[in-house]
Image 1: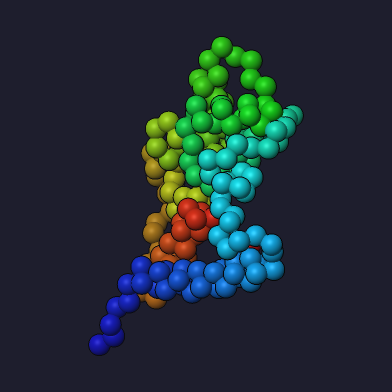
Image 2: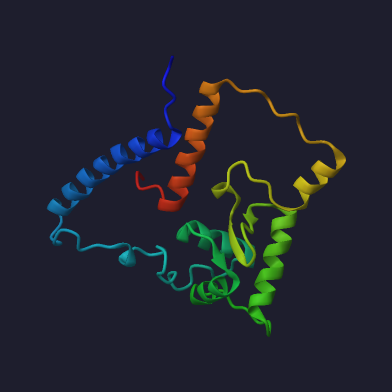
Length: 181
């Protein structure tokens, strides 16, 4: 009888292996620089979570384009107020009286029409690519109502495990950012 391997154990082992390689690369770069070890944190990296965007970064972009760029930079879901603040800091000029409502309305329309920006929970916006396999919006509801949803395909245990492993890795990479780049 074959012992079942937890998909979490596989993902954790893979992440630890990556972390070891990243730590070695960081130490090598720090030894080449004139900075003390650990002197650079994410707060010093432009666009990292919690840091303001570079001035003028969103100049000339539409609200959806600028929001998509912001979400790609931050790699975490954001609320309307946080989006408005970051877009204005990045040079996007918003003229409406209720800026948060305007951004929310524009992003709702974008989510329905294009689907690249989604609302994973009420009041939050993220990128569709962060949520593989999850359906958002009316398209999924309409398909279910019309019966056009494809029948699920029976997968072998190995294929199911492989897909779960890939989905977990993608989720972890989206949360942590792709440190390997």
